[in-house]
Image 1: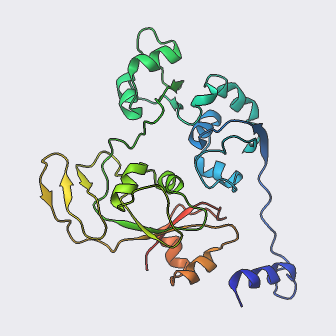
Image 2: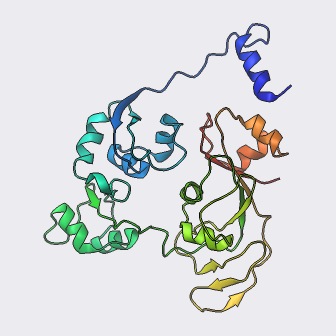
Length: 291
């Protein structure tokens, strides 16, 4: 019997399976706002001081990092945060809400370091926030006017170890690039794609961005490939390492058990390789799978 069907039967007959004392998790408390513009969930998270992961839990229908274009959408927000969201959003032009960001100034931040992080200019940040002396105040929030088309990963370095992702129905090259936070042009280059169409079932090669600006970057192709050293310009073969991981995007209705079974692994292995896994899976979440 399929696992999902078995779980449904058990849920409908709790006494028969000794589950009558198991209480379902309470529904999360939330605010709602109906919007008619696309907005990046990272910007939303910064507006209401929450995490992108929690926003994705509240909005499981979203499989990308942005809300739909050219249609209204009911955005679920943490309880009590609607007014905060609406006030913060008034400072962001409607056509920039998938690009611009907010930045919470922390100790050690300078205008120069913030400018470098978002690949924008100090003058544009100063102008957007009315900064006259170029100083930033710890604890304040700055509007970051990122130019459309620019990405924080444009100058990133990428892992020398290829990971693999099997394209699912409904995926697009753009949604996959969003999920793994890599530029679309890199994704096309690594997989020798001429256009942006992807066929369900195809296995894509992906080199994930490295934190902290590592000096090594993967080149194009799949499997074992030459690696370009950014500092020296020399090529080198990657040293032996752990087996490449496979990635699985969670579909609506899937459970850890069903994912483990379809990928010939165990629930324990999934939890081990995904230490930040939430108690409840959400559609669109990407899991690491190592056999």
